[in-house]
Image (cartoon, rainbow, N blue to C red; front, top):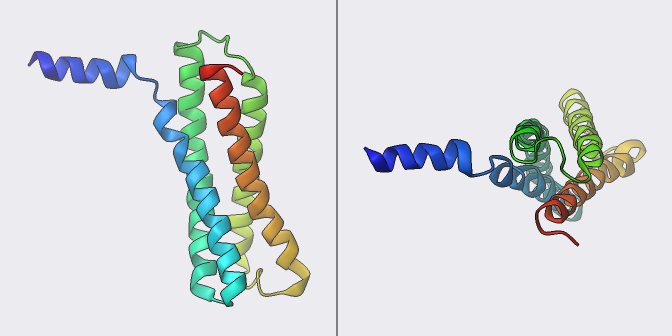
Length: 146
């Protein structure tokens, strides 16, 4: 019984919740960009659909990562983590951009294949990935310093 209590203490009090959650938006936005580039290269609609699913999941996982990040900011850092405002702004930007891309693609499935929207669509995916990487870098600065 004591080991179960230790497990719950470790999971819910000792270990920061945000750390495992941040890997999802980073990986999903990176995979989305990779699938999109492969779709362009191969002219493959299935790869483009995989990119769409990944960017949709990246938007959802950004909410979870943001909520756990704010929880750790309040609980672990007592509201005094460096670059917190920048991270909040960048996380909201990532969520909004990924959501706009996902909703736009859902409403108009041929965004990648239209010459008028192809570049903007690709830049949106690249922007999501760059935002996620920047957020990861700032998180590393908070944990380990420069």
